[in-house]
Length: 498
Image (tube, rainbow, N blue to C red; front, side, top):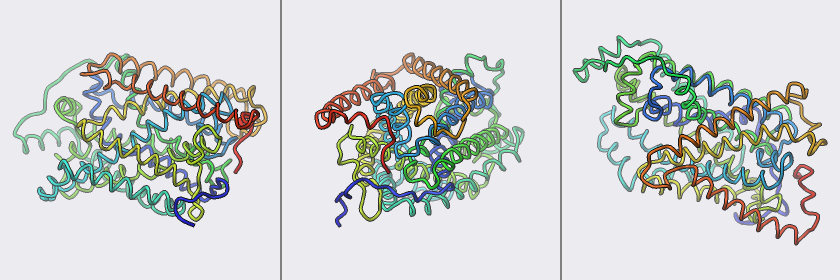
């Protein structure tokens, strides 16, 4: 049967084990963020200074609570398209679709951003090895977007070819990422500020910048929290793979827990190690004039070989993002189409590889547009901001779904195995809702108050436009669905068929 033909009905296969599910979440969370955000935020959140680690702790709390909400819902509704299925069965089909539509858009844009950043890290690996010609080529106006597109579509092929190949590739890459990232942690904790001052003097002939300020205020820490919360975005990818997970009632919640705890610990150790070796005063000075990264900062202390090793670790972390995020976005699109509120074309499953190949390719096309847009704009942080907005909305809605599911759909709620007791589940969901909604307010306020050259460089109006487009699509498709079958919306009282 040819590549584009459809199976008689969508039929995904449960091939992904616990290790593959956990790797999906971990690899979606660990990418450019850990190597850049804790350091560039010295520019984005003025006055954070030495308060990055306390702000990380503040950001970890809502992430952990949101993860518990996902775990509870995933234990009862292990289907492809996780967050969409949860909200459509526990809140309303409309909220489930429009929230996940903005999530899909934000993640698809982020896939393009990640792809576009990869050549920059390869460039940074070539420079310490003296390969200046290669470094120049990698950063060229033609080569950089072309290389980004090659990486993206290579992983499209991996995802289309099936979850078994996906898992066999992702697990070794994850192990390599942790191994090379461990070099940063060891190097950071075996050097201190005195070592860095000596290295800076030897390399540039100058002393450390002298900045003496009071500890950051609570308001500053809270302003930094949404930025750092973005580092934890990605564990929801596990939920999207619910239709292909082995033993999903057990493995989905367990994988979410493993991903959040391991990534949270790794983030904290990684950031603490860099700031242990590099004074925040120097990081703030450099961040004010250029984008700073962990490899660039530790490069003052390490040999070219070890610098290349940590740059390679950062590049692997970025590369790992692609297959995991492609899986997540394509399963959202597949789930909409399978429910009949999106064109049925996107619910097609390849007859041999048993993957939603049309949805994968369609999502990759949006990511390709993001690559071109990042290149033409010369910046990619707008895409990150859009993703943060959409994910905060999604996480808040998941917490709300935990609260509404028992009254709206008691039969499904009875299947919850994580946070089974309402006395425990309700307070956790309320706190998760309050914290994620609070972070959303802070993020939107910061976005609207930011100084930009045009309105379309703000993430909030772009997100609202995407939400409007999603609402129009829903109105048209749901009307057509009702015309075909007046009882079609009864399907939202039960889980999608497997």
